[in-house]
Amino acid sequence: MYKIGDFSSMSKTTIKALRYYEKEGLLKPVYIDQNTGYRYYETSQLVEISKIISLRQIGLSIKDIKNILNGCDMKSILNKRKKEIKENLTIYTTQLSKINYLLEENNMKNEIFIKEIPSYIVYYSDGIISDFSKIPEFVLERGAECAKANPNLKCITPNYCYISYLDGEYKEQNIKIRYAEAVEEFGEETKQIKFMKTTPVTAVCIYHKGSYENMRQSYNIILKYIEDNGYEIIDNVRECYIDGCWNKDNSDDYLTEIEFPVRKK
Image (cartoon, rainbow, N blue to C red; front, side):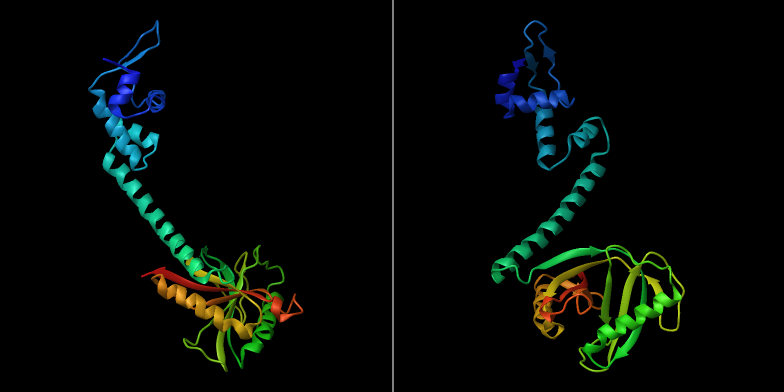
């Protein structure tokens, strides 16, 4: 038998770690001297400690290791850990691409971010506007019509509403759009107002600061990011108007979030 210090040297494991594993019930000394408190280990336990260290090195928790040592199905535990690692790799890859993007841009003026948009109940209305300047008028008219038919209907907090473009191509005149706003429940439909539940999506997003006429640059930046990072656009772009003519006097202070629903190719 070997004292804990000798066993520590043989197993290349710190005494602190050995005491921790003992406390957690993973590896107990074969003998403890009641007079001195010295702990003794056998060479056969080198195999046990190497297995514990190996499982720790792949990121398994003490609980999972304990379950394996107690005879639980190691394959299912390892598959669970494998899935966690793959998910983390996706997160780290996205973070790395953002870091590279910001390093290339050398500023955070046009920062791209990824977010999960949950499922919402929305009222929506499709229509055709003569040009982009008619969007505020369209939104206000449809909002008033919905409120008239549903006087007790409440929007969610924080507010989420957007315009999406339905033509499938860029147009500057006679543009087909959809206005949607998230609400707490389904309401009464009208000729112009409909209700639906949206599908949750992952979106690549960018904030555009300033007038709507200058959005082209923000669109170019976000579309380049999508292409460079292996994303596929799966639905119509959404423009979420956070600040606009209804609360800002100067168009330079308008704030719009551009959202592209995507998935990895």
